[in-house]
Length: 91
Length: 261
Image 1: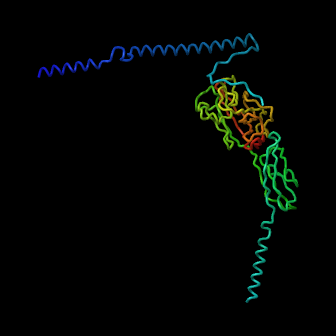
Image 2 (image 1 turned 120 degrees about the horizontal axis):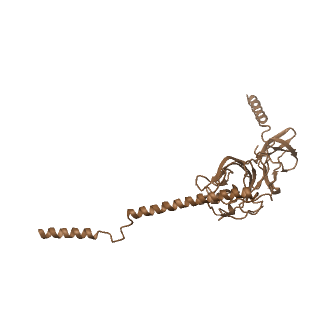
């Protein structure tokens, strides 16, 4: 009886040990997720800062052109790309 | 008794003959057909000879404008309806009319293509019946039906562009517009050949003639259609712009008449 009980305990222990995932296969940990999230947020902030800097630069450039170079060509803010357009046809 | 029956029959026969007099003898309306000539400026009317007719009256929008003894008439003044009636002395037949009125669609809202939202369509197309419908460029199934699209992504200002000019093209059509003043109803005939371009910057209150040329091979095809467009409003200080337009589309292939009053 004791032998059977011992065997059952051993089987249970082996099952628990056998079900453990191999090292490195358990997926990212919560800490790793948090770090990744922070990196993404940092990138988003950088893109927004760059966009704002670009808008500011364009505005300042256009102001400068209008003030000091009458009739000079100003630039427009870039818009969402949608493919191109070929030259028009007169008919 | 026999005499009475005979008199009754004779009177009945006389009444029937008198009652039927005129039926089938009056002038019937001519059957009018047409062809479009003169680069879409003229509607050449033709009709069959009507028995007993002295000549034919020509009506434009219900007003008698001319008469002829011939079987054809070149209508060069744009109108909504042209009609022909046969006449003999004071008698006149019913009028057979050709409907030249354009199909009007008012208050169409379109969005510059820098706004990619599917519920903000940037394309328009004309149905077989001539109604103008908006079409989202993001739906590739719409591309074959696009007659024009509104571009503020490749241009600083809102620009109407032929679908064949886009890279890659939405379809192969070479449709174009021509500047035609600012009075929508005053424009009764779309601009002539040589005044059209496949890309045009839009301005508020501008009136444009448009030419749907699916084959891109000039005037004369059965699938060439003309019309006019009013740019009612353009909103937005910069892209994305929104525009409201009115359109009138001439269903008769090749005809440039666009009378809307």
